Image 1 (tube, rainbow, N blue to C red):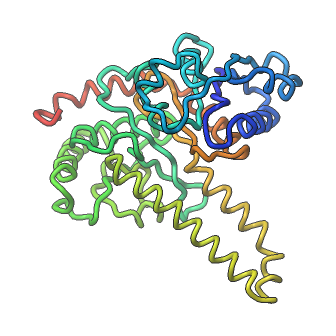
Image 2 (cartoon, one colour; image 1 turned 180 degrees about the vertical axis):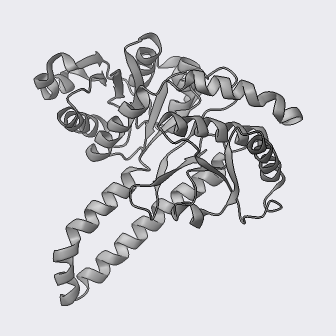
Length: 341
């Protein structure tokens, strides 16, 4: 099991949430080893019980959410984000880096410090979202890293996700292209071109492309990978998160609005709270698929529970060793993309 590097200063809730989440993850996962990057004087007393399972890189410098990503990465070389990425890059015993810092800074740092897998044009954010089928989820990419994409970018996203799912044991992942309808003629020109290219790769036996999919089909469990550019992928992700908050807020108001509702809340409250946590935690942490090592981004407002969840997710991706698989498939499909490559 490779070590996980944790940026303890990034995010809205800062070091207290990071350390509390790390402590819980260490308790729940005896095999977990961490490299924690942040203020050692605050971290050390809280993790002393874990002995050599925890290593601390001392710094008090953070990259703020509103700083220019490229400038910050180049100038704040002693920041928790940069130091953490350097640990991931230089050490064979480190398999993943986790941060709740600025998405732009984490992505830029990943580009500059870790680098892309050979042949990959753009890494993509790929969170997992829940479905109506118990225990089943779908991967969405890109979820916000690349606002403007070509058809070739979308095809690369699809093939990288396909390899990820296969590496986790799924033999023939169902790959769909996000669209406003299922017909091949629907969508803008980029999506139509991507559809044609993915159909070509499907006919060559390289991917189980099921065509265009609408969002409701994903949540029904009809697809394993949903491909989109970062703009529409992020819209889908944030709409989903907003809808979940709206539904649970409405349920709370209904349950607290009458005596019978309050009685019902006594029986259902804990179950609904657990259900919400299980479903929303899936969208909290996402790996930048396409980098040479696993860089995991948490929501900026991640609390201790979500930090624990993100660290456990990082444990699963740290040992997948996707580099060779993705590099091979990207090289294989490049001649088939023609002028779109």
